[in-house]
Image (cartoon, rainbow, N blue to C red):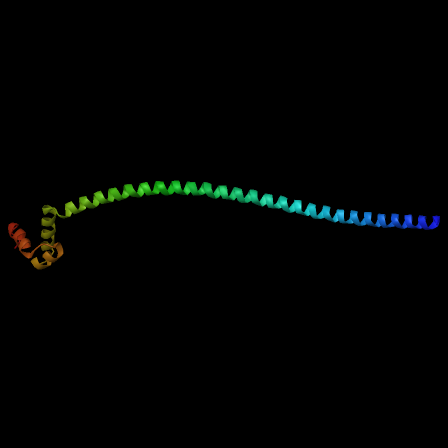
Length: 138
């Protein structure tokens, strides 16, 4: 009977040792999985930091581009104002009687007739002939 009890205790100890070995083997696997997860988490954090830095750079360059666009818009508005002013001056000069007279006289010297000059200047043929008569070119 003692031998049977001793055999049962030994068998129980053997089962316990096997269970402890299985537990430690699973514990080691769990540690490896946990370590791999920590490494992945570190990589993920590094990526997130890099992405955040890239996003900050994009925002900074966006602000710079917006400022540059605003500056260019102001410059364009100034140019538009200046061009409108020049266009107005050019229109005033082109409608100047002195300029029209010079255009008519130069066209006549080039051999153009009254009808051709009227078509070129947009004036009536009678007006052209009046100017030419005044200058004794008709």
